[in-house]
Image (cartoon, rainbow, N blue to C red; front, side, top):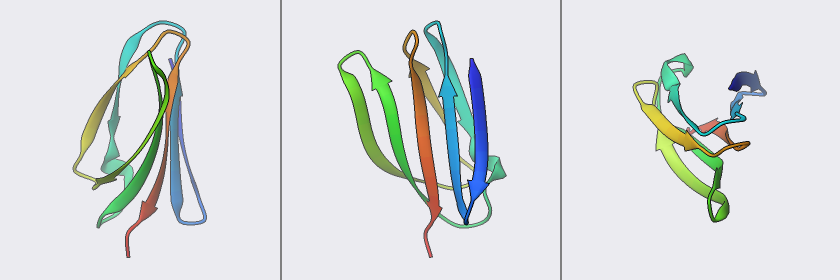
Length: 79
């Protein structure tokens, strides 16, 4: 499993990839105060999925990563 988070121009980008099927939990405690809109791209058995969710620094989300799969999030503060 390789995971990374980077902040650029006020937005956060979080990604994880793996070579075996496994769980990956994102702890959003690194975020600042307030709400963040998250655009999530995730591998699934049926292909690539895209969804939008709202998170705060108090949230944790667990993803089931597929073999040779991953997940990417773009987090933007809601003003």
